[in-house]
Length: 143
Image (cartoon, rainbow, N blue to C red; front, side, top):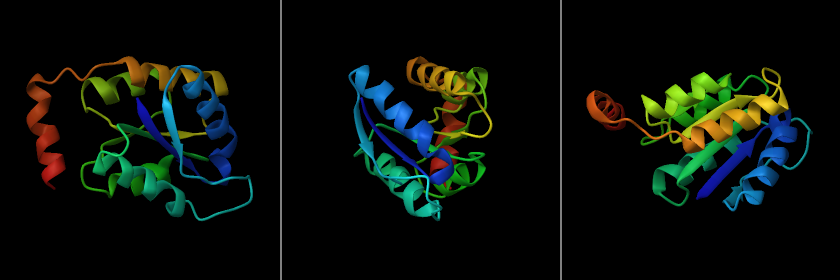
């Protein structure tokens, strides 16, 4: 799977960890930055991930920051992106299962490194159940 990933300075450490994990598992990872823990303005690195997912250049996207809130907001401003803010495995599972989340946002200050890896694993392996949720997803994409 081709996965875009981007972070601000507060999510940089987990971004590097997740890139290594994803590549070890055979995924093609596109790193949209940032490239250090030096303070940056996060939309510069998050919006390109969302645009890559919306255009189909990447099948999925992961955005990271301190809390993940701002990153989720920026990603969800792009038509066709359904970004779930994930703070545990269950939120990742439900984000895929019920909402067909094609992007997730994780806060490095909010979850452990092990939990972040488990969140990504769960999100990548959980299918969208479709059914009654499809029309809701279509309405979101039309908005």
